[in-house]
Image (cartoon, rainbow, N blue to C red):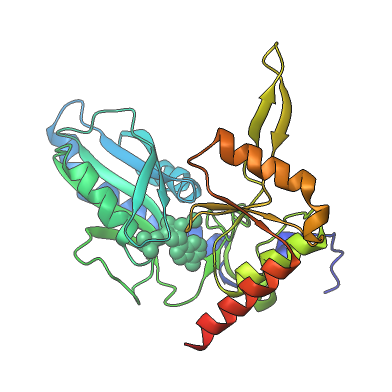
Length: 302
Ligand code: IMP
Ligand code: MG
């Protein structure tokens, strides 16, 4: 079939559909039926009972709205947002629940449980609030590499083993959540570099590539330092160093110019050091760049 495509159509990035809309809806109904059967008796026994559904933002929202509409029980909805960091198991609550879950029967809805570390952290947090019961429904349960054990995953939609999947809420770099199916991306799409930074100068890009090569994390022009304010409090002189290296807590200003031509940048760096004594900044000229590159290459060999 010939398909007319437009630039950037996300469907063009998909290599294979694993579960289409019909398969997903079928599975959602099965899970909803199981949940209805399991919690039905509580509803019948206890007047005013409802299931406290806690959805983890953002990916699980698609699954959650379909699931709760198929569950034939009264439910309340609440949401949490978590941010996981590079360090495994380090999770931060970005948005907390609005409702009290004490003595409630809580069902957490998640999009995918991978290592389980995110969920493990969340469970510890929620258990401390003393719900009556706490169980878990996940659209996808990746059973392969599970680092956290004993998760109360009572309802699981699909197992995708070691495939990275997108769609129906699941993202790759915040894209593809809106696809109505669950699929796998083409290799070239997954391999695309993250960078969309527009560098002001080729030397900056070169420096960024060097940092990338050595897997040193960097941010490009993350902040402006006020060097001088006028009487109205407006910034009359500011300085935005080119790079910040968070792992070293150091700013780097890159220049390829000869040292004696750098007086303006030097003055800015000096002014910054004077006014912000706790901020570390280095000026990197062409020679300095080469020295650093050599140092890093030497480090690579050891
Ligand atoms: P973990 O269980 O702590 O390893 O983290 C699970 C989180 O990793 C999920 O909430 C997703 O945001 C993300 N994730 C893991 N595998 C996939 C995938 O195949 N597609 C999209 N996101 C994924
Ligand atoms: Mg995600």
